[in-house]
Amino acid sequence: MSKIIIIGAGGVGNVVAHKCAQSSNIFSEIILASRTLEKCLAIAQSVKDKTGKSIKCIRLDADDVTTTTKLLENEKPDLLINVALPYQDLNLMDACLNAKVDYLDTANYEPPNEAKFEYKWQWDYEERFKKAGLTALLGSGFDPGVTNVFCAYAQKHYFDSIETIDILDANAGDHGYPFATNFNPEINIREITQKGRYWKEGKWIEVAPMSIHREYNFPEIGKKNAYLLYHEELESLSKNIPNLKKIRFWMTFSEQYLLHLEVLQNVGMTSIKPINVKGIQIQPIEFLKSVLPDPATLGEKTKGKTCIGCDISGLKDGNKKRIFIYNVSDHQKCYAEVLSQAISYTTGVPARIGAEMILNKKWRKPGVWNMEEMDPDPFMESLNKYGIPWNVISLKPK
Image (tube, rainbow, N blue to C red; front, side, top):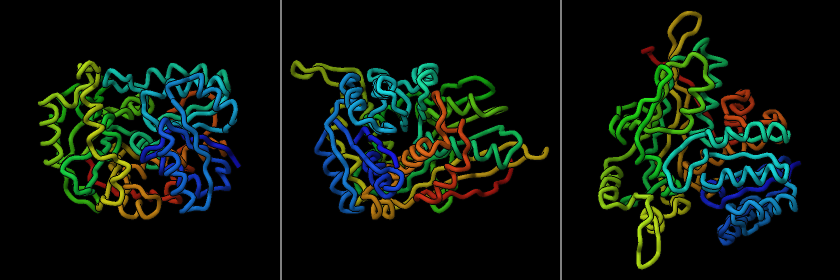
C-alpha cells in the first residue's frame, strides 16, 4: 500500500493514472499534479468512471523546486513519477532529494534551449541519491525503458556475449490528420530533426538527419522504411552491455509525414531559436506545437498497430545467434482500456511497472539507475501481466 504523486497530465500521465488506479492494492493513494489543473481534473474524472477510484488533483509548476519540495513534504509520497517535460527532470530530482522521496522518469534531461539528449546531467546525481538512500530510476518508458530491459533479458537468457543491437520502433497507426505527432510535438520534432548518431567500436558516429534508412519486416505490421536516429537509450546501453560492438536506433515514418516535416523545417517552424513577434520572444516550434493536434486527443481516431523491439546479435555457446524481442500493441485496444493511443500506452504502462518495482523493493536501491542495470525478470513478467505482451523470434544470423 503506497502513496504516489504523478507529475504531468498529458497522454502518458493519463495512462499512468489509469494503470495505477487499476491496482489499488499497490497504489493506495494517487495524486496527479500539473501546471494545467483542468487536465488533471479531466483525467481524474475518467479514472473515476473507469475504476471507481478517486485521484487528488493539484496545480503545480514543476519548474519551481521550492514549491514542489513543499508539496512533497506535505503529502509525503513514497514515489514521484515524472511524466512531465524532460526539461523539468533536474528540478524534480532536486525536489525529491530535498523531501527524501524516490524518483522515476521516462525520458532523460534535455536543456530547454538546446536539442541535446544526454544522461550526464542526471548521472551526476548518483552520489547525492546514494548518500540520501534514495532510488532514481531513469527512462522507465518503452524506448527508453522496455527496450533497455529487452536487452538485459537477452543478455541474461539468450547470449553469452551481445555484439550488435538495433532498436526498431514502428508505428503503423493512422489518425486521419495530414500531420500530427504521437507524443509532445516539441519533443518529438526536436528529437528527429537533430543529427543522427550511433555507437560503433567505442566511438560515436554522426550522420545528417534522416540520411540513412532501411526496410525492415515488422511482425504483424509488415515492411516499413525505418530511419536512423539518435535515441537516449543508446548512451546507457553502450555503457552497460559488455562486449557490445555496435548499437543503433531506427524509427518508421510515412512519406507524408516526412514531406510535411521537410516543409516545416524549410520555413523555420521547427526552430528552437526565439524570434521577435510583435515584441514577444517566441520559439517557432512552440507556436507549431500550439496549432498541431494535441497527442492526448488522438486516441479515439487512431487505428492500427505499433511494433517496437530489439534485433540482437551475438554469441551463445560459441555459435552465432540472432533474435528479435518485441511487443505489438493495438491502438484501439489501448483506447478501449484507458482512453489513449498505443504510443502513450506503451510509455505509461512501463512507468507504472517501474514504480511497482521500486515500491515492492525488487528494484529499490540507493543511487541513479538505468533500466538495464536492474534484474529484468520481474519487469518482463509484469509486462505480460499489465498489457504489453512480448515475443521472441529467432532470425538468421548476420
